[in-house]
Image (cartoon, rainbow, N blue to C red):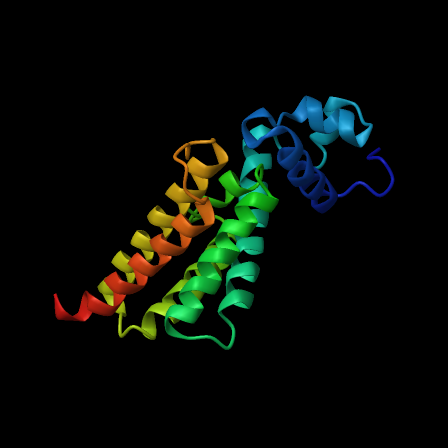
Length: 189
């Protein structure tokens, strides 16, 4: 009998919190079972295994990222939208250091929920890029550029990779200004 109140959604939410506390790479079913106060075999009634748990966590994180990015972009355009979405992306990574890596997984084509969440997240960036006159293949390339740039920054920041004596926030602002400049000049290439 599953523990009263324990559902697959509860298991995933608690896994997300635990991942933020201990790190995505240290998220195990044993640790999650301990947190939930159940025997390890009891978790298998709610999740098929650690790979399935990571997949469900990727869906949750992608949906959260989509919500954060969409809210940041709402009512904004151009550089204002770009700055808001980049800042929201970075803030999510800071707030959720364990689930953020799960959000980086490419969506599983067999998981409609994951595909929908990923499409919403990318849709927020596509909307900004339309303001720069970018669509189609150019928008795909520009989205990859945005993601690689901002992800690279937040990953280095999380790893303590910025040791030079300059304010990291200023460097982030300059990076976003560079993206804005690149997107403004994209059409002329």
